[in-house]
Length: 580
Image 1 (cartoon, rainbow, N blue to C red):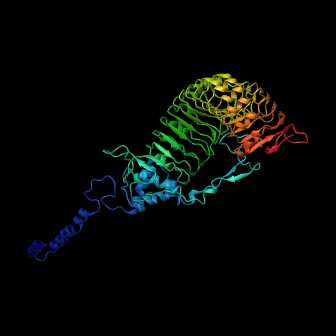
Image 2 (image 1 turned 90 degrees about the horizontal axis):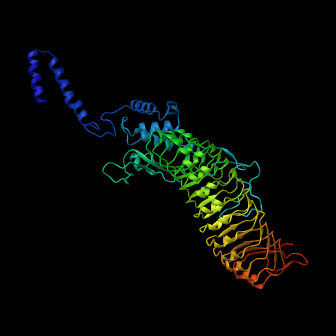
Image 3 (image 1 turned 180 degrees about the vertical axis):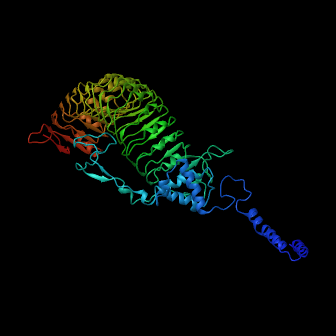
């Protein structure tokens, strides 16, 4: 400045009072004192980072315009929702423009994913958390008659009054929202937010998917986090590389956006146990690499997506407990990697396509509680790994396929509550790993195959409410694992074989409503694990042996026989209920 002063004085003298020198010095001083320091020390100056704030300050309005334009031009959100006050999109835009501590550059490639997560957050908070919808619960709970003998693990549903309705989701209001939400809407990178994982960074372990930075999102997991609201399409459109998406066990409602089909890298998708309505988007079939799909426990309706059979990578498909309608197409047989198929408790109809036998890896097939008709396909016996077969509560006709005896890995076979006829195939005696056999409530005839005596792992035999006859085979005593033996309401004749006492694990024996006769064998008293014994409405006679009454000191709590009347057919001093 001193030289500038000297130079100015000299120029002043030469100019004989000319003011140009003073003005020139003033300009130089402004450049040196104001402009250069600002350029040097402005935030972000000289930084090579592709993220963060710009090297110069943007006005709030300019930043808003740049980010909103980027969102609209990308097709992630429409301008109408961005401009709509208090919409999740509007709140998310205002947050990322002015309130997000990270203040990403509008050109940063992670602005859109960060914005989409903010939309997801605001879609599940405040007034967005609740939706009132009325459901006719008489359509969701099947009728159960009073005399139904439920299977192990089943409980009779409380029957509503016809036409009774309920408001879905109204029981969630008293629960805290978002049990876990650490990191969300903070200045930290979203890869560290709860339930979010990203691609690992270069030079790090592939398992290092959570860190304080922004990157390509690969996982969003809100399972059982008590999140309530709707799914915004933005979370799909802004994050095309999501591989794992799980919202199971929450309070989501509304329809699943069709844009979910854009996630072609998806491997695991679960929206189970929520309150979703509408149909399952056809676009979901675009996820050709999807391995597991869970949409069970919702209010989905309509037909299954066309082209579902083309999802050949699917290993598990779970749609049970919804309102799906329509039929199964032969394309089902193309899903060759399927190991578990849960289509139960819906309104599906028609026949089971025989092509289902092509699912050679299938281990668990559940089609129960639908409206299927026709014959059970023989091809089910061609599935070598089949372990669980639930076809109950349909309207299947015809006979039980003898080919099921080829599925030697079966552990559970539930065919009850159909209209099956004919005798029980002796080939079922080959199922050495069978644990439960439920054939009750059909139109079956004939007797109990003696081959059942070879089923040492069988614990449950339910044959009640059929038209079966013949005697109880003595081979029943060879079934050492048998705990529940229910053959009531049939036409069985003869006596109780004394060999039954060898089935020492028996807990419940229901023989009522048959034509059995003779005395009650004393050997029954050797069944020390017996809890319930029902012998009424038969032709038994004589006194009940004391050895059986002594079981009341062990586990026997229910013993019913024909001991009523002035001259009862059965004399029983320990029965808990008597019938005539």
